[in-house]
Length: 306
Image (cartoon, rainbow, N blue to C red; front, side):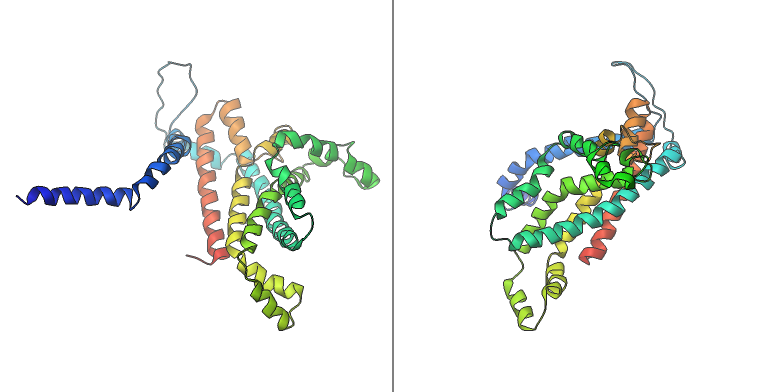
């Protein structure tokens, strides 16, 4: 007579453990969970499958074999000179973009946090480039940095030859500066939010002890916003790893001579334009693994966590 109530209680406990103390939260989160599964999890899993097979595009409705090839696609990726060049390009981008983004965002956030007049206007002004489509603002940078652009007109005989975006040594640095300018407003807001949690008493105590502005910034502000810095660096790394639109538009698809080609742009070129989706999928998997490793290292050293 007691077996049924016990089984019913165990079943209810399992349901409660799955849905948590507030089942309505699971219901509200379900649409986003489905979105993550459909938009991210399934494509990632399918890409992983493609990377281990001889895969190519076929006519709709056609049934073709996709034989298992093991690590052949990964070997092709790792031995391809264009892939090595693209990772070298993105390394140049990250070395310029990530430190500059974090430093400028923090300095400008501290400055904006102290501004009394026109604070809202200045915050919006920094944020506008971030919410503006890259296609819309690329034209401005092309006007500034083309061979007859404003920058070369100002520099005169000091202007580089060939010009910025057609120069193999300068194309990627210019793209890195463009992305810094465009993304800066978002990272400033992250730092502004973090600065609101820094107690003013710390700065007042430091002033009593005779600390100057630099000492306060380095000893109080920088450690206090360390979690925000870790987030900024991770997001900047992910942005760099997924770089596509900027080199595609600014340099006409990765030129000159592939000097601004990113791994994601190379995936597009090889996977869609040249019909090698298996190669592109293997490159994508390697890129995801690389970003995860770098993000974990960043979290370990910046946040100081295991």
